[in-house]
Image (cartoon, rainbow, N blue to C red; front, top):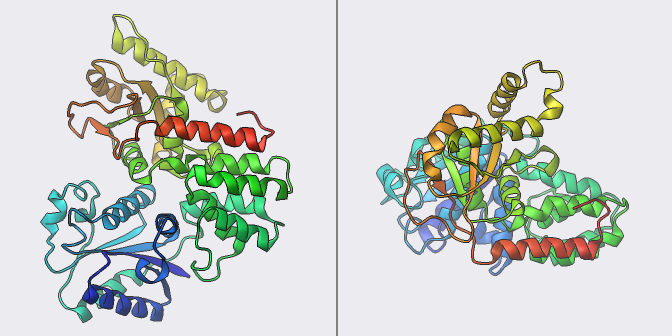
Length: 416
């Protein structure tokens, strides 16, 4: 069944009545609506289940009221950011902004939390009257064809395979330990899919108990290793990871990205969260030391070239001219929506190196790790994006420790 997520600001009776009529109309059209005012209880599960819905919907309608754009509005900007991420990964993802009374298109262009989401560039539906607006939304959704699996469901499918043969009561307990409300999910969803999505969306620390419970109940010796690696990036905020995806898949010259992280673990988790892919097919992440002498650019460019040829060695084994063939491979990967990310430490004067690096390596995305804090100076967004929301103090180390603790508890058989 085609699933449509509806983002809105709770509280207004007239808007809730409008959503109920929209839900009923979409049900008549064969859609299932995912909307929070009637399907989610308050508390910690709210965030997790909404994130799951955002990952499994086939289209979304965002009701942009003055309240939704208000300073105290939290969910609509967050949901809009994640929906924009979905559209970045799949430009065919149908995202329909509805301008409710009191909101104009120019408001989206200048609003601090909406101006970079690109909603104003989409086909927005201005609210005229209820009947006309409902008709236009239904008409816009009518051509929608559900894809076999959303990116989130593709990840979940890899966990589902490992959960085959696990008893239903065990799966229910895994879901409960993850804090998910398994009784309020899209129609027809099997228990192993429910448990897999719960594992993917629960914060990494909360997943620990579920993984420890699950480990002795799995059939394969390596199953828990695989599941742990799939859920490991869950501590990275999707709203932050969206910036990396948006920059990585933008046309050249694409902005470089700065994350206030310190470790390769942090960089890899950001990349995996941004691309929503398992370790085997995640975007390529290439590490360079960025240690150079007097000829800073030439030294760095040479190190990047060598690191790339090493990382892609198996793909270039038949190339007479590895450098030229590598460029063709990188171009093809980018055309397929598969970014190649180069990780560097942030050094003084780094911004001067970005334009020549972009010119020399047009198919790369440069990810700079700045340490505990983001740079305080401002940069043109065409040159550089500071990833926000930034990591809280100690968040990266806590996530790494939790991951290492999980490996110690679960005793995976594969190397770290």
